[in-house]
Length: 325
Image (cartoon, rainbow, N blue to C red; front, side, top):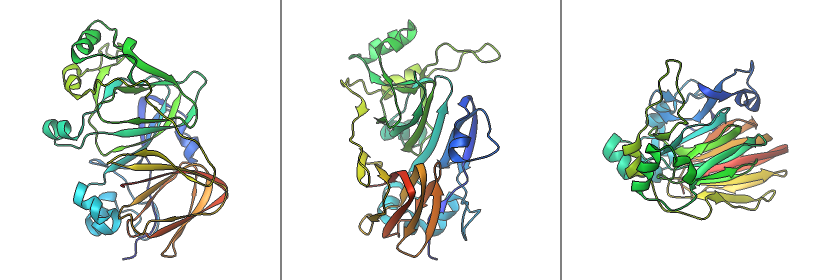
């Protein structure tokens, strides 16, 4: 069967810290309040994305992988990740501060949870005036100091805090301590993993007066204590160019801000390609004669057997393009 560009039904997550930005951004009505996340493309068990268009509408991402394997994912992707779609794509709208957390790397996640680790990246779509987030440490600490600071409630004092604006990018390798702050609306690209170690939660209590469970000991061995002077990703934006935002063994992500037709050659890639429409509208055509129209907030999966893609903005659009390099 000839595969085509897929769109999927968003998996909307009502969360206590969720805001009201996701539905309008994705042009979903009626607007639902308290949506903290939209899982755009997911192969997390119990949360498989479902095709929303074309002949295979109603099939899950898992069904597609089982039926089409390398044709969909790419042979090199199957060789590395088996029959798991290796990325989870989300929009996150934080009305409140999220907990301070860390994710284990592949080795630790495999040993403890039989899971992939979680390396991820954030792109700030919108931010309120005072919005900030945390990434990495503001000074060098070690495991012993970490444990002590969690005990005496001073862990926040050694985290690097960033005020953020639209277009800011943060790459978060597994092991980097991080948190999204109130007022951040973010696109997240991550490994397919749901393993999170919660380090600090502002001493918040639930309706029953209980604090949330912390994973102090599990996190201790997962944290990368290396200190860096700057944890932000710096890039120069250009129109009608492919700007690299992240390049690691788990994904490559480019930013494309287009107001003219742009073509991409994937004949040597041997990987699926994901397009996340961040702004505007465009038609996306492949080398097989398929064409799909997308608007802000939609995500497209281009199968690995796609050799070329042409984006025609109407009149302009912004995309994040992601694949396994």
